[in-house]
Image 1 (cartoon, one colour):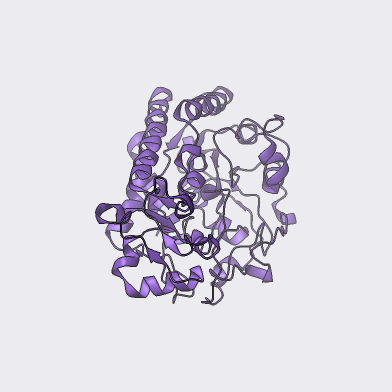
Image 2 (image 1 turned 90 degrees about the vertical axis):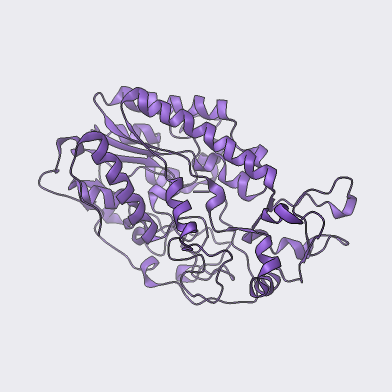
Length: 414
């Protein structure tokens, strides 16, 4: 979901993540003699890291096979080719939350990329999602302005091979498409506590329209689902400062990760303001802040605070949370209107995440004693990207949306 996958280091250690992110599969294309409905003859999935199968700050062929798009294609009984990435990955997924160690022995700062497996060299790909993209990118490959993707994201060339995402999708002559693009237009800004850095709604609208118009124009009769941007404040890498006030164990763990005893400012964190969200991966920055602000957590900016006003880039205060929600609502209002105008279904994934929190399936603070699921079973070790269990939920919700819209009879993933 994000261009930023920095995970905090600290003295607490977690064991190696399960073998599900380290194993390797040679099969990269699923075939079936006949799709269970003609509209699924050629299914393509456009998107970013979630759709691609990015988990725990990395991606390899094992995490790719757990993507909701692969699960959905299985239920459609249709061909689905993925750009299978060899183990340990590109980059390898995180194996240890707090040290940053990755599958295969890479470090948290490693840029290692094992490239694609030879078996995945196929003429056309059905999953054309690329981690890190924003709404600007799906039709922008080759545009000199697209320097971030061309120069800093090797997966662009590895997956798309010089084509744009939309062009790569159209190579399949698709009959059905899912499009989940837009989370990265705001995710990094929200986690960084700088919601003003998100893509403005008018720019988002222009970008999204260009992407969908080009896709639909290139595939007459195309059917599909447009998926809304999630309310990114639901990701468990963000936790409420109030948890540290109320839970001594969480406070002790946060202090250890931060490397300094944290002090929750009693003025700016009073009352409802304790609902400010703090990014787990920002904890180590409190140790390095200049005195007298070292170790002090402010839930709001301190007017005229001088040295006591570090800006708290890892804090999303109550007002900023409302800004994030309003921006995403603006994004999704357009996505739904666009889906309606072209006859596509629309799916909002945010209620799925919200239901997990209401069911206490997402911890209020990472469980650092867990070796495999510190953010709960539904989120991977980066606290942002869904784990395998969440991909099943997403696939099944999509199946319900597709069946209702198109009168199909897809069955749930078991």
